[in-house]
Image (cartoon, rainbow, N blue to C red; front, side):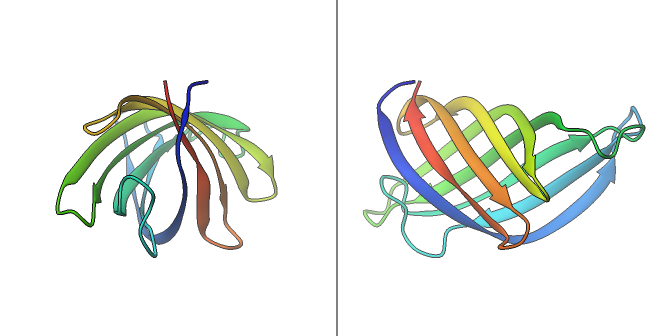
Length: 127
């Protein structure tokens, strides 16, 4: 794991659902910071998770992120990541994703989502 770029905490702002060509559930949830995040400023984005229809209680699966940050200096960052999620408790998940953003280049994120608090928190690292 590389150098730490920033810690983050995002709040859930809504979800939508669709069916993919294989008949799986695609859950799309929107997230945002409630304040400024180090390096990235105010962050908004979408997490997409695929759930297999034949195994709705799976312990792991795939996920992806697309988002943008609006820095106080007026610049914007665009980022994309993909990876995996795993159950880590009752309605709690651990996510590991890698990708890139237009400010830092290659990045890696380790994070956790808790349904009880509708909070997604973690750390972004240089890959």
